[in-house]
Image 1 (cartoon, one colour):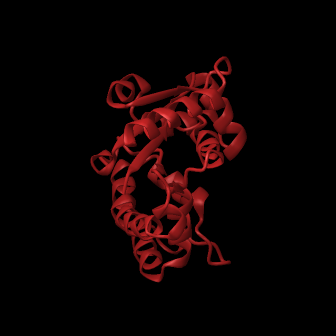
Image 2 (cartoon, rainbow, N blue to C red):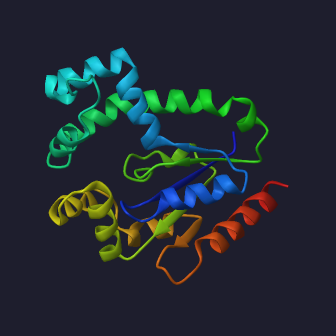
Length: 199
């Protein structure tokens, strides 16, 4: 499995970049989306989450109470680590199963999109890393609008992630989402470089 990591801080625009790679014919595994699906559908995971956070972890409709979980883990590093210890092994198992599906097997490479590849030491299984960066103020504005959260809540999340200055030297490719350089052109160039490195 030729697996390329796609990461970036909250609000950096990595999901937009992921959609561009998908348009270029590259399958993208959305770790955050799949993690939420597993937390809503897998009985053993749900049981562990309820044990950790209490019954409030799920709504009366039996859906993950994302706002409640976020309020707990983004103010308590220990609980964040405990949640990750529950979810990450399940996500990796799901990723392996996904990689063996027909479309993925025939692709020159695959992308795993995840916000915390560096923070959770998930880079060891990757062949290369694409980092998306954006000005912090722009990231804050995007996240506040997207998630309907306060500035302080966004800053708490940012503090839990590595700063770009630390991630850039550890990345193979960097995409700048600053509104000045077209994302499509940057993604296409990286796609060509990865493909040429394979052939």
